[in-house]
Length: 173
Image (cartoon, rainbow, N blue to C red):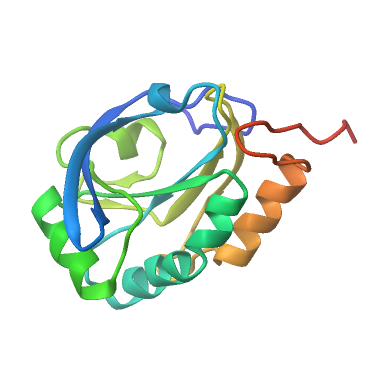
């Protein structure tokens, strides 16, 4: 499969995941189709639970999580580790947004961010409620990531009038 581009339909998936709510875990299955017609979802692919840079990256998203919610967007972290690893990671770092387990599911490969099947390239995709990729960043090096302020700025650029579940696309340039 070739690289996904802005404007392409995002590959559908169904992944097991967890979210920490009020100090307890809620396990569920997550799919893009479950977000149909709603605000954007930010898929944040990351290499490894508990690594220094991944912890820094996801903690920065957590610190600004309310800002994403105010824009009507959801953040979903995706790595190859299982749900149990995600639970440990979430508890240790106070992460409350969903962490999804792409363990043997090939979602990273479908998005073109899998490196040899054993690690995911640090990448971010903003996908609208119709399942279309509106923005992406795929890191060339493993230690760089997009800050939450940049991702939120892209959401505001792409959807200039977020209001609850309603979004307006930016006018054509």
